[in-house]
Image 1: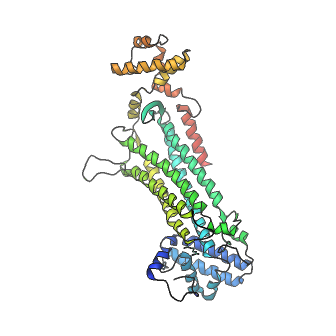
Image 2: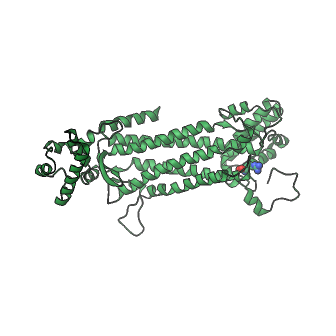
Image 3: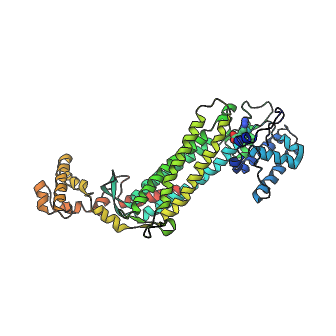
Amino acid sequence: MQLWQGRFKKSLSKTTNDFNSSISFDSRMFREDIQGSIAHATMLGETGIIKKEESLHIVEGLKGILEDLLSGELHFDMECEDIHTFIEGELTKRIGDDGKRLHTARSRNDQVAVDIKLYLRHEVEEIISLLKDLIKVIASKAKEYYDTVMPGYTHLQRAQPITFGHHLLAYGEMFLRDLSRLQDCRKRMNINPLGSCALAGTTYPIDRHMTSELLGFDAPTNNSLDGVSDRDYCLEIASDLSIIMVHLSRFSEEMIMWCSWEFKFVELDDAFSTGSSIMPQKKNPDIAELVRGKSGRVFGDTMGLLTAMKGIALAYNKDMQEDKEAIFDAVDSVKMCLISFTPMLDTMTVLKNKMRSAAAGGFINATDCADYLTKKGIPFRDAYKATGALVARCIDLGTDLENLPMEEYKKVHSAFDDGVYEAINLEKCVADRTSFGGPAPQNVMKQAEDMLKKIED
Ligand code: ARG
């Protein structure tokens, strides 16, 4: 069923109708479509464009449709072109001629833009709340493991000692940025396109400020062409979601490594792990792998949206119907990932001893050994070279800096003395890294508490 009857002598062919139709994926916006129509009808009544009683009749009819859709009494008619067509048709079926007045001074072009914005505003708010849940878990874990020594890596080679809390808080910072990006985007998108009509506004005395207020928008859009052509909010949300997926995917990759026998820094709870159909010993981090895998989908959605928008002349073009499946998929995927990832993180067991023994290998205190000499007045580059020679000597002798005898130290540089053993003690190496943003336990505790406070505000 189409709304655009009158001009055509024939109806659409079945395949064209199927190809053209969007109700299979835009029906999820039925609440928003009805909400937008109620605001529009109210405004039409208040401005005298239609009679008050006609307006009330329409609003009452729309409320009945909403109720019946929610209760399951009313089903979508999949023969309709889209959700807008279905609801207007159903309204007229129910209330007669007054239903036909609803689309006065409106087009599906501004209607669909309003629906998507209302729908996405709600979804963005949900994702913001899911991100807050994740950040809370990260910060609480960071408090719990504020002094748990682990190796920090560069190039996936053991580099310098850090704490597990510090490592977790690095992700906390990423998700805080994601949160502020979404909050920012929500603010920018909250402008009302309704009343842009098909593209050129209208000659009716509509009140766009009234519909903006009724729908919780901050203002009406300034330009009617832009109002119906703009999908920046879809591009922006998809981009923000893509960055969230980059962060979740990196975190997942680390979780997967940490679960392996090669690392065994953490063990996932059984409720968040899977087994193998053939290998009885297996416990697999499927959830983390799926999250990592789903990042590709969300990037694809973003790329699809950018490409769909890049070459279309103003104003509405049917290409824009492609926006919905992409942005819905991105939103659904990110929500599912966050809903699964957060409790997986929350329930993991942290194997502190494994982290500590990994930190003891790989000479991650070599920088501290060089710094010990530097603090005695030796230029850093010379201290660096001397320590390099010590590491080579340790490798030859099959030992580490902690167990290398003092005479070996002296051979390399006469300024070494017994104080070096304390200076390269891993707990001390971490505890002394008190520079702002560094991994010292007291820093981590404060950063974690600040993060929790930020989220609660
Ligand atoms: N189903 C359409 C969409 O999602 C609604 C807008 C239709 N407008 C039009 N001029 N054909 O984009």
